[in-house]
Amino acid sequence: MKELVPFTPYDHAEEILPVLSENGFSVSEEALKMLSDYENALLDVNRYMNLTAITEPHAVALKHFADSLTISRFIPENARVADVGSGAGFPALPLAICRPDLRVIAIDGTDKRVRFLRETVEKVGIRNAGAMTGRAEAVARDPSFREQFDVVTARAVARLNVLAELCLPLVKKGGYFLAMKSVLADEELKEAKKAIHVLGGRYIKEEKMKLTGNGETVERSVVVIEKILPTDPRYPRDYSAIDKKPL
Ligand code: SAM
Image (cartoon, rainbow, N blue to C red; front, top):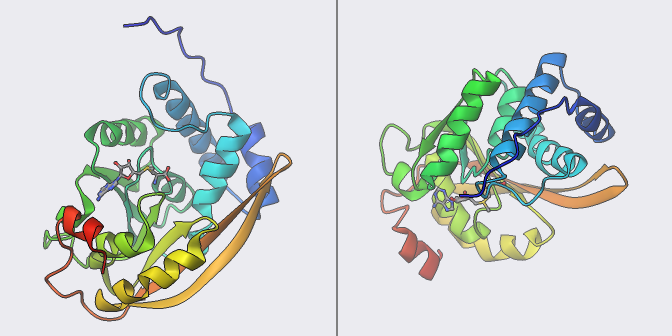
């Protein structure tokens, strides 16, 4: 194995703070320090484990941190949140750091990413976040997780018609599924209308937004779906069935 040069962590506050402020997010000193420590852990481990293609510090601030925080305003106070397919922790960890009132669980099917998440939560001292290894469709059949969350989020995991079947069964009645999407959202939404209805959801709105930082602009959208009825126990199906024949 190739020898790695020792990683030198540094304080990323000067890159993170202007990007968050430019997009209307205010953060406490403590949260800023935690985001910086998280970034150091991400960049360090990313040298030998594939966690993210975004490594330039301003881009991390914009496309990982600010982007993760776009959904904060849709999340009620003290909510129990599950992030499906969290990967290296987006949006789960920035949300937990900036919203200490939430209880956040990051779910991912890849054990090595979950190990990174657990170590990072420990190292950074994120007291209101945890991580579990599991496929969402299996976790959602477990009664201790099924329909237990006020909010379920997902970014960059699957098309909306597939994602709805992975996420909506985890949402409790009256709670919300927040799908983080880029510019394709309109087309995906049309394709997912039936799945949302069959799974007990109701489409509320799609909010489009532009995030800016360091001269760059990215377009994003958040699809807000309310859970109005319990999900039929037939769902979620196995992943191969969901993927082959989305609802
Ligand atoms: N949400 C993160 C982000 O935006 O940076 C990670 C996105 S990454 C492209 C997709 C992640 O979803 C991977 O870590 C993968 O292991 C996970 N994943 C895909 N399908 C899943 C499923 N059915 N259940 C749990 N995790 C899943």
